[in-house]
Amino acid sequence: MQIPEGWLLPQETNLDHADRPDYLRIHSIETFGTHDGPGIRMVVFAQGCQFRCLYCANPDTWDIYGGTFKSIEEIVQLAIHEKPYFGKQGGVTISGGEPTLQRNKLLTLFKRLHEEGINTALDSNGRLLNHEVEALFEETDYLLLDIKHINDDWHHKLTGVSNNSVLKVAEYRESTGKPMWLRYVLVPGWSDQEEYLHELGRHFQHYKTIEKIEIQPYHLLGVQKWEALKMEYLLKDVPSPSREIINKTEAIFKQYFKEVKVN
Ligand code: SF4
Image (cartoon, rainbow, N blue to C red; front, side):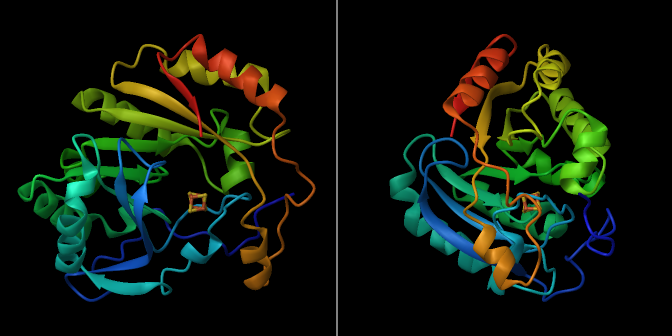
């Protein structure tokens, strides 16, 4: 089973200059989100992604020419409108797709949100770390970093690319002292191997900025999107993890992380 050739984008792909200035290329916006960062949040799903995860539930976010345009100021105004519901913890999360494809525009957006007293979170696959991404992380109150697999071969099999940059992003975030949550998609036979769950735990156990790790049990809800896009869904015979697998993973992670949450 292998990611088809030609699916992957160059690591440094940058949509900032390719599209309309002051507009983000987005897939969708969700209000009252409770699964993407602290509190109640407005979640903006950015268009475009450099990973090609076999289990991706939103393959319609991959196309860097897809989605629709929304101006940065319009998103700020929407967030201001939602602000009364955010409470003390909530705010705006940019997810995707992969937001860092539009890193400079997001930096502008996050600065504007901070001017309005709105908390910012970024859900990233960690594919890229450069000065532009570092500047964006500076304005990111919570980094939600997806760890697809701690083993590089398995990471390749699952996403089409190495986990090297992901681990560097985690290391960089740790060096800044700013908060981070890890997210782990649990796929039976692919990312539930006990030795690698322990390896992941050992790798991160001394990180001080990791507030929690979230286990995201794999599901098949995205299959219809793959079919609609006329792409073959290669994990169609893989079931969602059983309660036993989820419990085992949770118990292992609890040995290394102060908080483990099953989403
Ligand atoms: S990183 Fe997220 S959006 Fe990109 S392919 Fe993987 S699951 Fe899909």
